[in-house]
Amino acid sequence: MAAGGWSSLPADLLKEISGRLSSDAGLLHTHQVCAHWRASTSLPAAFRPWVLAGRAGRSGLIPIGDYSLRLPRRGAQRMGVGAPPAGFPYCCGASRGWLALVDDARSPTRLVLWEPLSNTEIALPCPSPLTRVFLSDDPLISSNWIAIATQLKGLIGQTTLIWRPGYADWTMMYEYGTYVRNRFHRIP
Image (cartoon, rainbow, N blue to C red; front, side):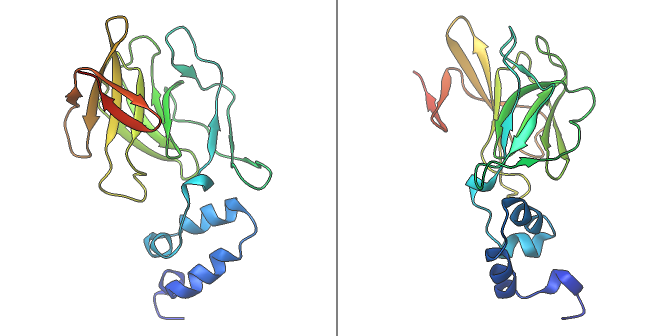
């Protein structure tokens, strides 16, 4: 082994080892060791945990309460994770293994993205009112990701907003837009 320790294992050896892991949890943990291991092993989107939460409240936001994470393969085993960030009891989106959490169901003032397996948090400016938040990519894997939020406008309309890391605030993408089947569409 080179002087760099575990982080300097050859990429082909890491691929060989990760291909022999018997559980999705093992693959997820291998993927989270360091940037070199993440770049050397693939993490199919299907291996990301499913987030199961309670029923939607009157506002449409989901109180987290008792939740569990289950992997979609190999018997849907349950993953043990820590508690969500304090003061963020409502979920306004689950995207690419991340939860978008807010502090209040009706008039949120704080918004955080939380990845339960690594316990990573990313604070974002909070557009209020807020309907849903989606991610273009996994912030742990890509530096070129964006957050996309929707707000209700009138009885049936929506406003679509985007936010990139480093932005001070959200930018209106479309005054009327919608999110269907993992794609955004503009409604003229």
